[in-house]
Amino acid sequence: MDLLLIIDERRVAVQLKRYTAPVGNAAVQQALAGMIHYKAKEAWVIPTTTFTKSARQLARSIGVRLIDRNELEDWLSDLREEAVDLDDRPGLGVLRGLVPEARPTQGAAILYSPRILEG
Image (cartoon, rainbow, N blue to C red; front, side, top):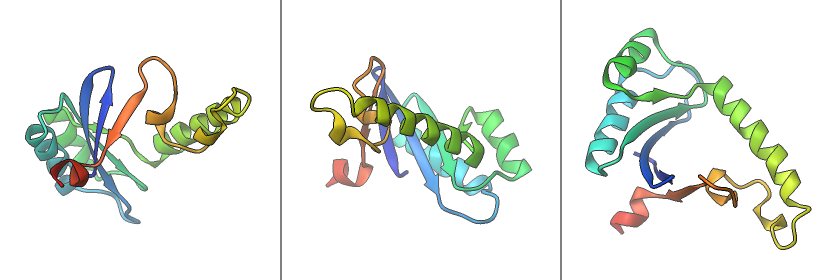
């Protein structure tokens, strides 16, 4: 597992994959294992590509959320727009380009790296 997010007091285990080919079952299984190990409420897999049919079926059957490259691109586009809006708020320009945990809004996520937590 690569990330542990805390969103509205809910832990989310996130498995990231930087692949050129579709992501298969192993990443879905890793996300589920991370969710169990870190006692998270949700597990997500976020690749730079898409998913195999079997990975989608497995994720659906075990409740792992799959966020493919299209959804990731939309997410990043929204963050860029919000970061531009932040530039107009005193002292918040430094947040430009950061991931969701840095947004000063209700429901914002806090990001942890499991490697740091286990330090």
